[in-house]
Amino acid sequence: MVAKLFKVFAVLFTLLLVAGGAGYWYVANELARVLPIEEAASYSVPRGQTVARTVYEFEQKGWVSNHHIWRLWWQFNERSYLHVGRYEFEPGITVAQALAKMERGDVELERITFAEGLTVKEWLALLNEAEDLKKDIELTPEGVAELLAIEGNPEGWLFPDTYRYAANTTVSSLLLRAKEKMQQRLDAAWAKRPEGLPLASPYEMLTLASIIEKETGQASDRPIIASVFINRLNIGMRLQTDPTVIYGLGDRFDGDLRRSHLRERTAYNTYVINGLPPTPIANPGLESIDAVINAAQTDYLYFVARGDGSSQFSTNLADHNAAVRKYQLGQ
Image (cartoon, rainbow, N blue to C red):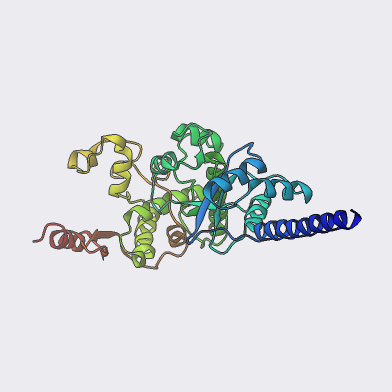
């Protein structure tokens, strides 16, 4: 009888060892699991989501075979919470590494690019289309002005660049970054301005840079175009630049600039007002800002587009009119 009981216990003990070994192998294999993905995959953690819910969703995706093991592993190791955001997982990453990435808050960054020369309204249109940005302010020029603590028109104060941000970043924080970048560039440029520059403030430098930005078709022309406007300001000659007229027309501009527009008195029509317009007409890039303080030394007072992106420069009206006939009228 004793011998039979001993054999039964021996069998049971052997089964327990086998089961325990199999269980240990199963858990160890699960904890070493690599995400079964062949290309980069994204996963979003919404606000308030638990680790238990996350590993359950991993199981639904086929990324883990038993979400209970991962939930218990997380609790046993006294791990922290997961950060809100979207995460990108590359092939070869383990489940443990993926969870650790979300614990660190190593979120996938979105990006949005604002080209040089865009207006505030064009910035706002791009921001409005960005689905991963939290719209926490009124997306109007007035809303931007209030956010940036600017009286009146906020045009010109946003630095063109590519901005990286995490999902659910606020529009206000991104705009404040753009304003800070522009302020830094302006301060640095103003500190290097040459003597005799006919500008009274960094803001006037920003305004002139915005005109240069809109007038430039070829980057190498920027310092020469800057010299034309600086030469005009020095002798009290009107700037007579079409982009300021177009800006002053606002939504009324239909793509066709008419002679009547050039005669219409607006605050921005530099054919009828003296000096600079009251505000910038776009958000200029660093090259246009630098062109103001590094303008070429020329006697040019006129320029006209050649039609290939470059400009023809002249020192007198007769030569300018001849260039207009050649490049604009084809005579």
